[in-house]
Image (cartoon, rainbow over all chains, first blue to last red; front, side, top):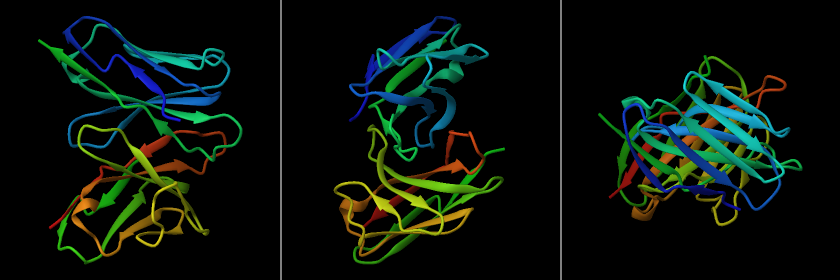
Length: 112
Length: 117
């Protein structure tokens, strides 16, 4: 079942922060975050595994609450290069053979 | 590291012909590769899972006789769209999961834009 992402779109000024949420109706083993720019393939950002972990690098971090079946992606002090569509991909628990189901995406636009 | 290539990057073909798309993991071995299609401004829809040396597993609603998948080696998977029709026009993207134990990341290729006229 497709995870639900919110918001659908967000517009920021350079330097502002944003949070993108991803929630699932089923138990999850992992959540994968990707950013896709127009006409290009998705670029891997990070993966969070069951266990309620948090991860981050530079100004992009994420959390995964397995009990709530939710993950959030945090973008701080946004840069113009952060613009793109962000997808979360979820892997269900119980042996899914690594198959990911992607949300509909969140379009992030960072303006100067 | 973790580079995945696709060839061709775009292709235009006539209705009724077949098109082959290659997906290669350049600097790692991939026991599992995935094929997706993406329509404009929409999400990635998984078509099939390709495991090296075995038959691909197709998602519900995907015709296995129309979308032939071969995973001949740990670095190459191919998708052949047979008897293509205009409704098959789409962006086809592969991803590869490393064979490394304990690794769960999937890396995407740059995609192939197929236009059927």
